[in-house]
Length: 235
Ligand SMILES: [Zn+2]
Image: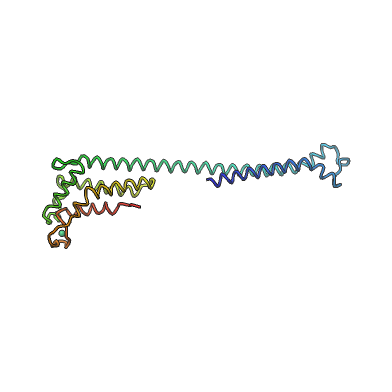
């Protein structure tokens, strides 16, 4: 847009120069033409006709050039306005998307805050339940029937919402600083309240079912948390 503004400034300077040259030409034309003997005031009729006759072609030519330059400047000005409108639309769209993603994050926070387990609230409740699950016998990690009941179902919903949030965050076209901020918040949440309990390795020998050295934390939930973790985009 700046280059177009500069072009328009140049254009108006060119127009001014042409105008000045035109005025000078009009002023000296009657003298120029009559001096060389091409035309003489005495043989060219009335003095007014001579001045008019010699300057008219110059003035109309200069006039045409100036009209052309004015049109060109007008077209460029329209383009600049159009670009401003397009930019505004883009800003509005980004603002809407930021509101949407902020609301989704608020909803996630509310869901976490309303979670309660054994008198512990919010993230404290998540830690308490995760710790208990990790301490269960490893065979429960493979028991999918547990996983959509009661508090487990609630914890599952929290992680699903967290994953939905991070997936939506990756899709929207908002300022990269805002994106970074939300990504860091999710990373902080996982690192502080979730991952330490899932990743705590069992001291028993390898699991006979899957060959890994996991604890009692449900495999399906652990996979969901891993999915959230892999969706985090940090620069
Ligand atoms: Zn296993």
